[in-house]
Image (tube, rainbow, N blue to C red; front, side, top):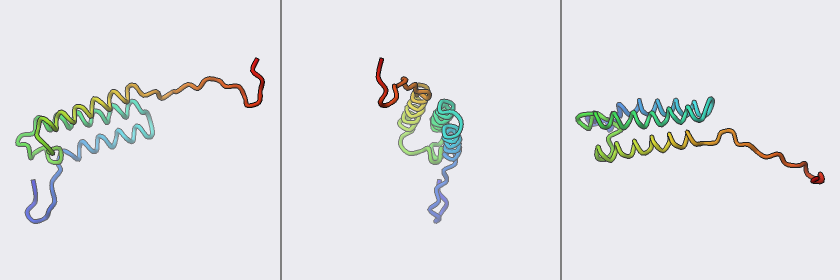
Length: 106
């Protein structure tokens, strides 16, 4: 979709997906890594669904990059990858107690 002569491409649904992902990044930064990761993964999954059901393809706006099948596959893979990464991240790493420098070990 392009306005005549302006060079401006309407991205439409892409703004929704980017907004959800931005909220997820803010949640990661200020609240909780796991919940933020779930939100970012959800943004990718929402993008995949929109790209899958938008008919004709140009209605998908900025989500329309390659073929429909490849776009959906890539968005699903990214969503699943972010979901797995955020679910398995160790946010409370435990450091074993270490003796103080210079103290004798008994």
